Length: 151
Image (cartoon, rainbow, N blue to C red; front, side):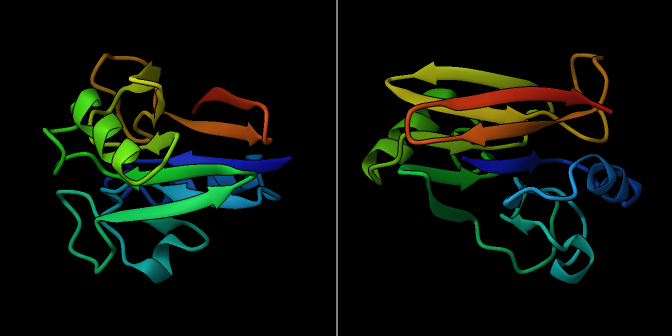
């Protein structure tokens, strides 16, 4: 089993990183889905994609393979403004069964066209008025367990 801390849209709120590190200091992967407003050094240990507000030189997309799952990671703004169908189609075209994305400032865990899409929400402020949050994921070949963690 691998453990993933999935974060997005912190918009410069650096204190979030230390709070998350205190909660989950031993994850296998730390991933950020864009709009950190930080450079790679300040965002460590998170690997990030570029969001629409980022100036740092992050890639627009990443592909990862974890425990037999192929993961397409993006911010979402370049795929129909985080349209779930557009992202699931992009993932399928690359042979991915999971999408990690941000941009919407909403916690989402939904399956569209056979692809599971996970948005950890915003660790700064969610657009639905709910508490800032991120996702903690435990992943095996057979199971992808996603838990919303409110800050």
